[in-house]
Image 1 (cartoon, protein in one colour):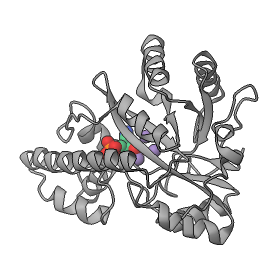
Image 2 (tube, rainbow, N blue to C red; image 1 turned 90 degrees about the vertical axis):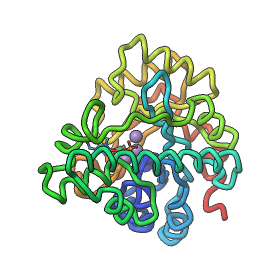
Image 3 (tube, rainbow, N blue to C red; image 1 turned 90 degrees about the horizontal axis):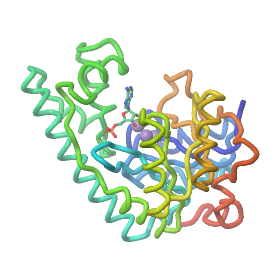
Length: 287
Ligand code: AMP
Ligand code: MN
Ligand code: MN
Ligand code: MN
């Protein structure tokens, strides 16, 4: 199972383990021909990724993964093939970055109250100027011996109701979709089954998403089952959304989640890249 398209991935510009150029190199080695870099709330890795992509003949799609709050829950909207210089998109992202810094400070304060000091300074250092995410807190806590691995640290400290969790008001769904679509991109609902919604709530979300101008939904991801693919394909058909495929790759340490190792989109589904000029090569290697 491999795909020449991988339209969801992370670098050190947010919580990925590889630099943008290392990521592009690895993707190319894995047989990916069209890669979207979609870091959390930042476009900062794109320039480096684009230079690396030119060198290895890979098509880089400028992307981003925006954090939104809809009905008191956090969702991720991937923007694909965006114009990274579009001012409303840049301003929206800047706002999200401010929210991220404030949240990180607050998370560190909450952990300090539980006798876990020094988290803010540590995650700032770890992020190296990139976005600070819960993944960075997880790495810090594991490093300090508070849990054995990232997965258990999330369960014990970083999910709703746990000491390091800070409820956050991210961007409005409608606004985030607007920034992406007005930047010439395609707004895609990321990993739709990870939110654990009832069918009813998922349909309300997709109706709101569609109403706001969203045009795509992820159907195939790193470890989606045949059943997951069918479920999401049915949502795509019902809401007339194009389908996307993306590993959501973060690190080579996650051996179960590799770049480009993706099942094909069901043939009845229109792929998101069919929405781009010249099959996504319209903005290839733009300056
Ligand atoms: P944030 O956007 O700062 O809330 O961080 C979210 C990121 O944390 C996601 O993109 C994942 O990379 C990671 N993450 C979320 N939940 C888990 C989990 N249960 N185990 C491991 N990583 C997770
Ligand atoms: Mn992440
Ligand atoms: Mn996500
Ligand atoms: Mn992601």
